[in-house]
Length: 77
Image 1: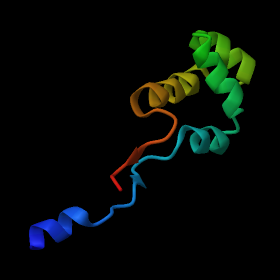
Image 2 (image 1 turned 180 degrees about the vertical axis):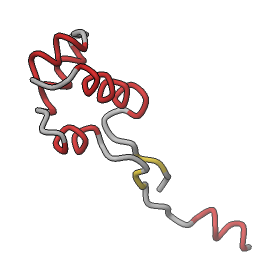
Image 3 (image 1 turned 135 degrees about the horizontal axis):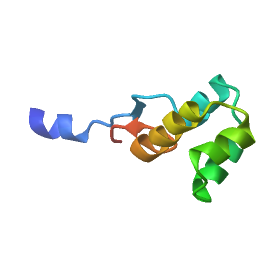
């Protein structure tokens, strides 16, 4: 009986990482422009120039997008 009860409990999804939007806002980067640059497969150098940020920052934001997506939600309901 205990097994059935624990399986039926709802678990709220939770975040293990900040979202890409939160990270972009924190460093003053236009999120929509960042995602558009990734969508158009622009180089880190091109995006750095357009966003007026260091290339290394573009690299890290892009890496976060490819490894964690836009939001990093885990769990189940």
